[in-house]
Length: 290
Length: 146
Image (cartoon, rainbow over the protein chains, first blue to last red):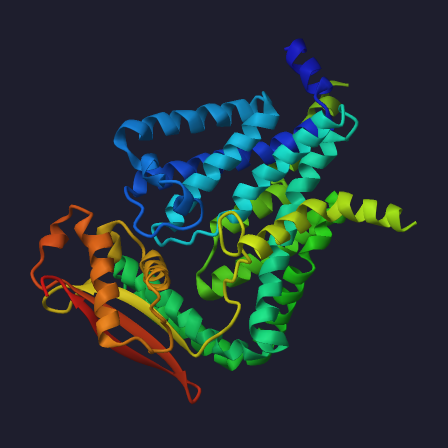
C-alpha cells in the first residue's frame, strides 16, 4: 500500500495530464479503426492515398486479423510510452490508410483531424529527439495536438465564410431544411415515424425564434473562426473547449447531429476531463495521506 | 525583433499552419480537409431510402448502413463519375446510374432476407425550400431487376 501511495506521490503532473489525453484518444481510435475494418470489404470509390496504393489489402480476410493485432500492439506501446517517435508515426499512417479506405466507401466521417493529431504528437517527439532533447516535450506534445484541433475548427469556420460570405448566419433560416432532413435520415435508418414528428416540432420552434437562431449561428461561427487561439494557453484552451462543446450540444439538440470523430478528440485534447479527474484524485490522495 | 515574433508565431501556431497548408496543396485528401459541414444552407437537400414492392419503407439499418452514409455514397459516386448533382439537376438516366451503383454497394453486398425482395426500390426524397415552406419531392431512382 505504501509503495502504491509513494508511486502516486511521484507521478508528475505533466504525465497525468498526458495520460488523460492519450488513454481515451487511443481507445476511441482503436474502436473507430476496428469498426472500419469490420464494416467494409471493398474500395468502390478510390480517393486520397487509395488512389496511389491499392487499399483492398486492408480488407483481405487473411490480413484483417493481422492488422487488428498491429493496431492493438501500437495502441499498447503508445500507452506504455514506448518508441513514441515511431509509434505515433505508425498510428498516423495506419489511421490515414484505414480512414481513407472508409472514405473510399463513400462515407465521410471527418476523421482527418483525428489522424493528424497523431502526426502532430509524432512531430513533438521527433523535434525533441533531433534537438538533443532541448525542447519541452511535456508541453509540445500537448500543445501541438491543441493546434491541430484549433486550426481544424478555424478551417471549418473559414470554409463557411469562403462559401457563403458574411451572410452565412443570416441565411440560417434555411437551416430548417437541414434540420428536417436530419430527422428524416433517422426515419430512413430505423423506420420510426416519431423522428419525423420530432423534426417537424423543432422546425416550427426554429421558425418562431428566427432571431435567436441568427445570434446562435453568429456565436458558433465566431467560436470556430477564433478556435486557433486555443494554441496560446492550455488553461484558456480548456475554457474554449467548453464553449465548443456547448455549440455541439446545441447542434445535437436541434439537428440531431453529433460528429463524434470531431467532438471526441476536441473534448479529449482541449478539455481533457480524464486528466482533470486523475490529477484531482492524486491531490486528494496526497492530502489524505499527509 | 521580427525574427523574435516569427519564432514565437512558428512555435505557437506552426503545426496548425502546416495543417492548413496541407489542405491548400492537397485539398480534400485525408487527413487534410476544410471540414465543409454546413458551410452553406442551400434551398435543397436529398435523402435516399429503400422500399419494397408495396412501397413500404425498408429501414437502411437492415442493410447495416445508416441513411447519412447512403447519401454520402450518392455524392461521392456522382463526383467520381463526373455527374453534376444537386438542386434537382440530375437527369433520369443519371439517377438510374447512381441508383444502380448504390443498390449494388449496399444491398447486393449484404446477405439479408431483404435483398431477395421482389421489386426492391431505391427512392430519392428531395427537399426544396420555396416561399418560406419546404416541399418534398419523391423520385424513383432504381428498381432492382430493372
